[in-house]
Length: 148
Image 1: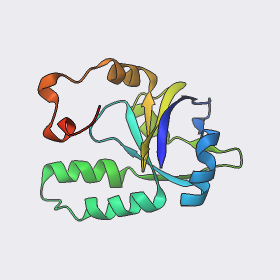
Image 2: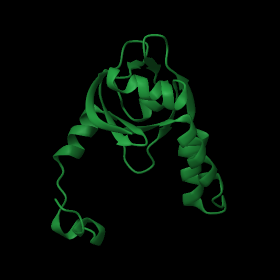
Image 3: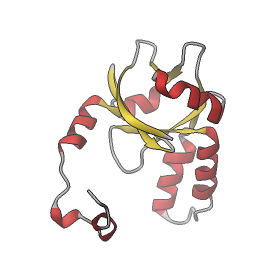
Image 4: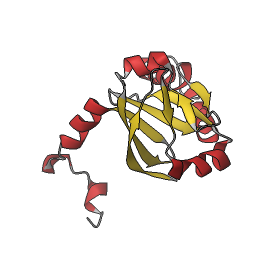
């Protein structure tokens, strides 16, 4: 289970360090192999899954009919662009260059632990998301059940 927000620096070679608080979990859960995919819902963000979790998602996404344009778009972003990356001995991951460029992730980024996956945000996209508030009209019935 991943949770929390960490400022991340992407080095000149495109590598990021896994925060030390997650390294043991990443090693145990997925043998230091993670999968980078595009976030199909928000710009400026990549999703990072442990391999086993991504394989389950991949199979579900591939089970969708490719006759539907939205399904094909989702398949392209989650399956077609999936890149398996292994942590090096220093706990660093090479963020795929094409995904990094598309999400506009540069030197400063933000890593969010989001339960079963991580989200890697460009610093500016993350700041924009955090600054946005949830309006009363956007509150769903499921949100109303929360004890906030």
